[in-house]
Length: 425
Image (cartoon, rainbow, N blue to C red; front, side, top):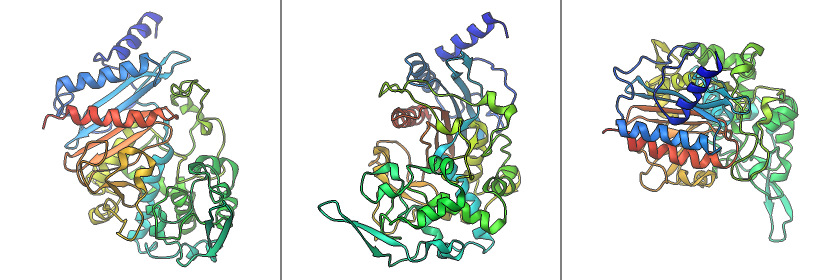
């Protein structure tokens, strides 16, 4: 590509103009009869203008937006840069670290075992990981002193899937209990083998009595290791066999092949809010196990197909991953009235949400800062990726970006407003 052509493409992307962009990947879903179908032209222009502004003001290096409406591909566009330092334009087949959007896929993988009768939701995790016997719950007094009491309840598979297990992320608090835990899923997988990781968790006090409070943490990482024990395969092998190959997700994996590394999207070197250097650690460090909580990579197109599979009731292009009743069960609220709902503590846009199996589920409209309908479900990634499904609108939205700082939460709210504001009906 000559410099003049490259410059014109980049300028067009930043300005939000419509371009036919050369790409090596085919469209992830059948195209709508007209581009942007289901959305107003003015709304589509606002979306383009938003990304142009974010990129021009160094709030975001680049992004890929993929939206399906009524089963058709309505929006599929690259914006800005895959690597801004190298002046490398974004492409629709760019690869992104999913961070916690990995959790949704790992949960779906586990539910395939559930459907086979191999993973009952009420089964204690000690059926596979006896290290979790005799767990203790941490209690901190007014002076900050930590004591422990024996847990009354066993951690169940359902507790892992819905984050009611007490295995907290160390990076999400400053209590004496949090100090026992790794900061998050990716740091844990970088520093510990699967066996070391389980031993670390099992020897730590729980933040909550299992089954009593929603708290974001390591449940899905433990779930992934149980999937490995059931199957005798790595989690990547499980998901490839049971999910990715059926959905058609050729660029989704836990390990990026050397030939695909040039497609890996990079963050801005400086966090736009804090002004401090930033990086995505997992981009350059090898993990010691396939962590179901954070470690997978994918493209916007692959993940859109995954979301469409869920919206379709568990199948896509004639290949079934889950039964429709299992998907309905997964995307229902699993937090009963006796479980403390802390979901909104992750970000303000989660007010009015409960939690299903691997996804947040809206139970009431009008409380959240984000628009949407009762029954919409979602989860996002700490490195800047966004995913939500609205069954009432028959819509799947995936935005892949690399923004590992707090600005990612601002992007989520703004993108939500732009998408819902652009809908024609």
